[in-house]
Image (cartoon, rainbow, N blue to C red; front, side, top):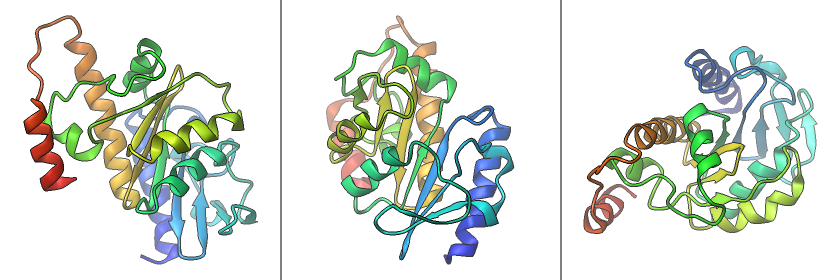
Amino acid sequence: MDEAALREQLAMLGASLFQRGYSVGTAGNISVRLPDGYLMTPTNSCLGRLDPARISKLAPDWSHVGGDKPSKEVFMHRAVLTARPDAGAVVHLHSTYATAIGCLAEPGETAPIPPLTPYFVMRVGRTLPVIRYYRPGDAAMEADIHAAAKDAKAVLLANHGPVVSGKTLADAVHAAEELEESARLALLLRGAPARTLTPAQVDDLLSTFG
């Protein structure tokens, strides 16, 4: 997919996330890896009203070279994309249920959402590290995100929201959606004797789909 098509897809998927309540106001940001750099949603932009032509473009060294000024959380995307060379996109949301889990889980936890369904394991993986709280826009969180992302497709920022990667932009969006629905399911089942997938079942899924 060329850059023009990726810009259109980013705007379309951003609007879909916004319309379905995964993002509100100007919350959340998305990035996509290009052969010659990166695309990034602009600062203070609404995912529901992105103009493909105004989406920020960054050079391979992450300097701003085109479009509107990029999100102030560009370091968050850099942390994941440099840690995961196989990742083609990153989605950061403030989605309600995942953020709720991030308010309940302890920083340092690696499985705040249990493996309740195969789809969570297939799209998000075995672990979801919880990164300690940082003020929004604080670049000091980059090192923690980078370290955690080396072994995890997604991380959960305490009291903030999820940061999710995927091989493609569509994969990252689908994984972010699956994480949100899995968080919702975990909260619905909180305190109940829910049956989770066994370690062997998780291993089987990861060996087949991971």
